[in-house]
Length: 622
Image (cartoon, rainbow, N blue to C red; front, side):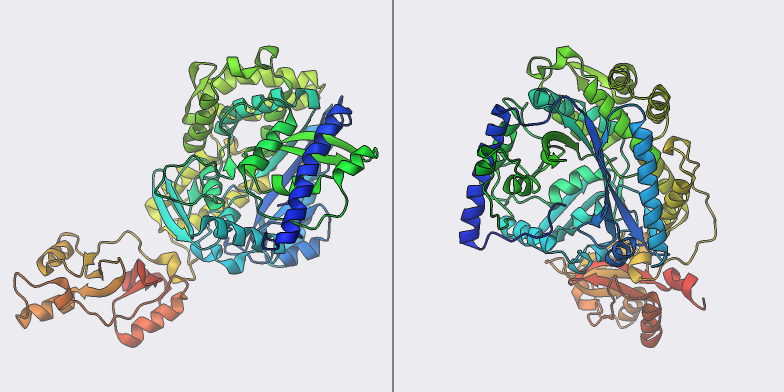
């Protein structure tokens, strides 16, 4: 997430100073290119591993700060949510056994994290979106107490002028409003970095864009959010919407999201990409900067380009151009941001090997992509791959292919060629690419999660299914076998009492009535569907009462309604209710105290669920 010490743009004097430094950084970078100061002739790889922290019940843990303090290792840093952390791996020269070394280094650091987490009754889980995240863990109290994150949240809300409206459509639909950017905290990724020579940057960047769809199609691993089955890589749509600063207006405007794929092939030099982002996007975060980067370059010094890097860190390209300084030498690199965390470390390294091999194996005829492939095809491929994974049909150089065939028959030989060119250990090449091949022919992470979630849902309620799924992902990760070899979840018929809150067990697929409906319609629905409780809403979609079969029968006996009677005339208006965060034992006490058979569940006056005595039966006398 970048530097921790930042400010919002409310300080006008600091803002003006920051923008001057931003402009100087662009001039300095152009001067560095002219002077050939940017490192060339060497290729390094690097990676960032984001991971989730769960409690003993596989729900998000708020102990990231405590775990981080126990780890006490500079490789680890915070993430925006208190249930996530990140590992920054040391860069390695891309040659010989660098990828197996990277795998060993990552496993060593993850083992360190696991031991530290155990001391806080917490577990480490690798997954694109933790299945058990609920709306509760998206509240501001779960945001890491870091100034940068609060500043980011404040600026996104200020620039949008409204709360975040998340709308995703897959097999299920999810439409919800939220008051913070913490939906972004649902996402955990394995971000890969590849150093690029300055004279090849534009060709490499465009190639990275072109291969994004096919690569993503074989790496998908986050199909679930809040119990809904959405995209094969739901992170793509979720991240885009959670950090969107555009306002909805009556005018039809072409404004790009800060999370973006792009809208055309890049041209010129790396400086032109950075210039475009300064031109397109308003400054979100600022910081005090003392030295002028332009003056430093003129003096023969290597600047950090602090303003440019901070601004670049608030523009979330799926393939992000990066400037950095290592061992006193400035360099360019491309950061691949769309690959999910998990399912295992070996799957992640295989993804990296495939991507890096493709990047270094680019055939010379693709040095100029503008005449070979329409950019809109590259962008469409990316969206299709995020939606439907390896079942997608992708357009590659004006020909349509099944994603699996494109990966196996066209891209795999290119990747193998690139890895050989970089003198990667042949054993590693065969091993890691075989994992990609088996996944293409068989099961990806999203395939495994979707298939097993559907089986679990046939037997259990949503929450139990999600908890069981998270536990199974963790168990399989300990075996360190690729996801294509994972067994299915074992279905144990007896449902475990893993739920603790009303929101975990409530029924959400509800029949409701409007207060202005005819009573005869409402009672007919109750008869047709054999239900004894029917919640009632007003025209503002707010909960306002309930019909119970006992109450309806009493009204009939009293002959207190006729064919023109409305629901509002016979409903119970004074209703006992609970919230999704009410403890199950408290709900039981509430129902026993008031001698009621159901409990509507409300959030901000709106009905989100209902529980009955039947729902609570597994917890009675437990």
